[in-house]
Image 1 (cartoon, helix red, strand yellow):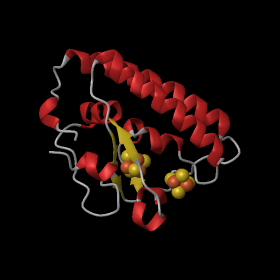
Image 2 (cartoon, rainbow, N blue to C red):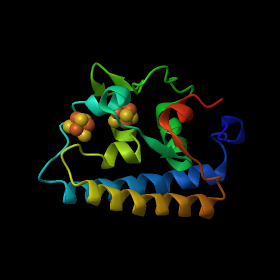
Image 3 (tube, helix red, strand yellow):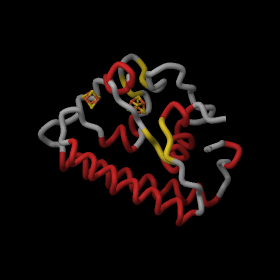
Length: 147
Ligand code: SF4
Ligand code: SF4
């Protein structure tokens, strides 16, 4: 189980990994833009209410470390089915959002998104091996509420 007690901001392997996560996000955003031009996300924030939308978001260790580094800890706990970073219907930390938030397009191709997700998860696993950081794949609520 993921625990913040295993990580701290000065961990050199984490800092090096965060640069790689930023590069991964840049490549991912380009790939998403290329495959979803026909149905771009309107950033309405509806899918950030997971219970109402019937949707779940899973994230990995590198995404969570990148997020916490830029957004700051303590993270907001998730107390219901809505991402606590959705404020007034919008993502309040949009540039730092997770892989799933970047890939999911309600009007896009599910197959293309699935392929992109699989390819991205492979890269995130590779980063964990490269920087000797434990790989966790957890739902957003578990991640945000981690001790
Ligand atoms: S993916 Fe769809 S529901 Fe989610 S923010 Fe974009 S337009 Fe809204
Ligand atoms: S991080 Fe932003 S885009 Fe992702 S679920 Fe939360 S509010 Fe929505």
